[in-house]
Length: 125
Image (tube, rainbow, N blue to C red; front, side, top):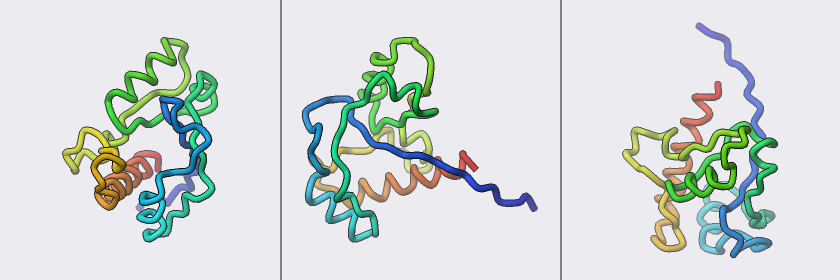
């Protein structure tokens, strides 16, 4: 049996657009996350920058348009890879994480995020 290995991960959150910069996460999403033990109250939106591609090894996007936007921002400069978050949860059959602001399915979004996060952790370890 292989020994467990410690994996140290640094996380940050940013959007490809600038329309929410400085604002906290949407209130109903914060409530749904808090009910699962995730406190998002100190988060404030920021926009992805070119420097992020050097600061991080991997940049994860919630949908295909975000992947395209990230790759356009990076424009072949090297650095972090951009991947779709649902790539880490193929068992779900999902090709993106639906925006709960529009779908109002906060629980479904959290379920998918948790599955993809577990898949990512499994791959890292």
